[in-house]
Length: 320
Image 1 (cartoon, rainbow, N blue to C red):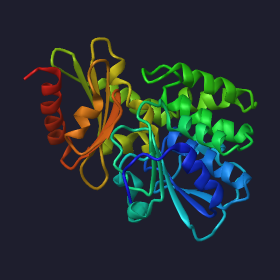
Image 2 (cartoon, rainbow, N blue to C red; image 1 turned 180 degrees about the horizontal axis):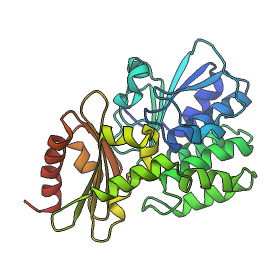
Image 3 (cartoon, rainbow, N blue to C red; image 1 turned 180 degrees about the vertical axis):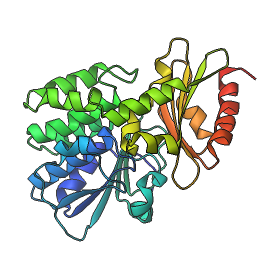
């Protein structure tokens, strides 16, 4: 096993030679991990190989179009691939036992520490689906509207519908090419960026009402308590779109969303504006991610977790 970077063409060659692939996505799945996995799965099946996608958590209904009309194939995997997974802990409870059996790791996080026989990690790529796009081109896979829809979903969600600072000209170029395959663009954009349940709207109003401001308004902290989540009837996956709310406020450089977990501890999402590095903040708690978006887990009650987090943010902002 090695942590060196493998040329993508070598990974393409390996995938063409092998069969029976299990593709791992990260817990609390988002559009990029799912888009990467199902695009790769569909491509491998087009090449008459066995492939299936698994996730420790239930995949949100909003992503059902990614795997629609895909039969569940049961087989014993010979090869295990992780996509968009920066840390073995992100495999979740069901699949963390596979952490030392990963054959191929494909990711776009600078903080990646997954150990695999073959690794391709490009932290300067906006979305992992852009890497999968390159990989499928190297494999000479014939694209169709289903593969294109998967890749577009990952690129659009990880760039915030092409609004985030990680968006590049190449992101737009790839998305434009994918649109040529005729998938339902309006449906995907509505589901990913506009559609909200009543419970989600209720939760959003509670969060905005209870936001806290620190360091002269440079930091905004929003908390999601378990009892509030239960009152609204919102599901865990409905929280994902809320992570950027604190950062949207004028003057806020660091936006934080703290989610109280069912068993213990808190899940933290950090969003920042330049020049503050979100991954630097989360690294203090064993987490990581991107410069403008990162996450971690703090195994403390929510108020204590908030105080520990604020100590780190104070140092990063120079507010000691």
